[in-house]
Image (cartoon, rainbow, N blue to C red):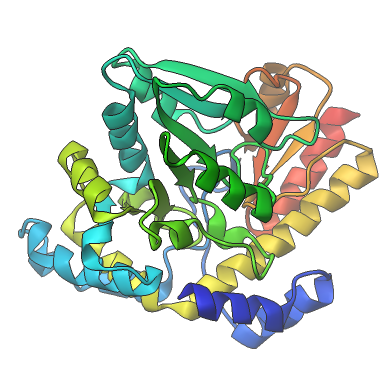
Length: 370
């Protein structure tokens, strides 16, 4: 779905109340079978996956694409790059396809963290880029989030110096689920992108239900020193297929392409081409995610646990007890929740799931917290 169409749809549907959510789902009349990996009695709510995906159309494409599985990805990549360029409103030389957005993050971490350069990030946040850059001797400045669990842009800006290679913004942030104020975000990027490269990780951007919240692709179009990452793992439900992409001005995109090692595969490319066109499943995923988050908020409110309103497909909440103990206690109730996120070790991250999984989570949490 193109960003302009997405904004209009969000304004039309509205996601402020449960009635709007249910009405939207009824209008789509979708009937997707959730995953049944391994023991189907276990609610897997730990990896921010979409249990409803891939869509039926994508599954059909996968089944019908095995005849070209013998072909290398470059034979079918061009059409996907063109579709992505049209979707993002850029030219093809702005697009870098990779094996999930994580490969793109690591390529950027290597490119801008090597030779003794420094990387700045929030803390806690998604660590792949920083940890990979540290493999090549980069120094990473991890700046604690503020009292609202948001990026502390003022403190991050104070860390910028002549050795800074890259500033990493995970927005929405994993694991806190918060977004950066849109005016502060653009001001921060345009204030520092002449001194360093800004990386805007938008893996969860599709779940933001604020209609006019901007993607930093808008700055890429201005030829700023900004990299944006996107993925098919989340809203499209294709985490296991490993495909994502970066958007950057051609000069930067060319350097990033040189750092891509695994890339993706022919079947994933064919699936991604179909997923982009499947607006119904895209909308269905967003509405089901909103419904699931409302269920999580409800049980947290009933128990009286502190949490942060999320702009993602997970919720971060305060357990008041060591997360390692919490994970084990929930596992005994057949519910798997997120891993530890230092230094916030008495907070838990739970992913959204199916209606049945959300009911299972509610029962388990009440029992564990009692």
